[in-house]
Image (cartoon, rainbow, N blue to C red):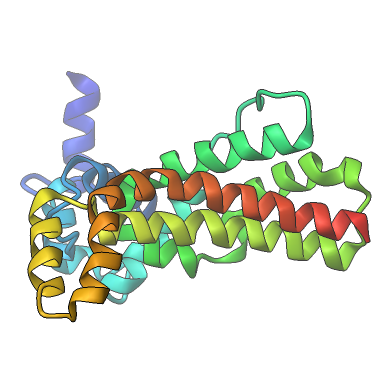
Length: 221
């Protein structure tokens, strides 16, 4: 009780607790996961930290600067646990799947993650460099490999969250649009439509396999 009273006197009665940049970023990241379909605005973040929007502009010039800071923090906080598998291919496949699953809940932040500042990427760079070390790639090729992996993971996460699943409604719309095409083209495309959801589910596995194949080609040189 005494400590609470001293804190009230220090900041003045009726005044809100002092904010910090870290507190704002953490609250915004939690909000992005909790309500992914609602736009992450300065006003909503201010409400989450119990403050007025104008108070946040002391720390962030605009909304883009705030969301970039949140994206950087989310990426920097990524925990890369021990990877299963014996070969580097198995371990890289596990890393790419784990990383995508970690990023997907932050759908609003994904475009900012693609533009993230270098310090936020250090954790991933360390993990990938250690994972690919047995290949003894030339430094230029190693830099290309880790860049390829990172862009593939983030790029596919953006694709998944913005495209969404192939629902029955989307398939019906495609069927209606296809009906306007000549019969020969309708007959060629129609069998593919019900298979599109399954193809989308398999897509990331194919993308990961192609990425691993590209790195194997670098190693073979």
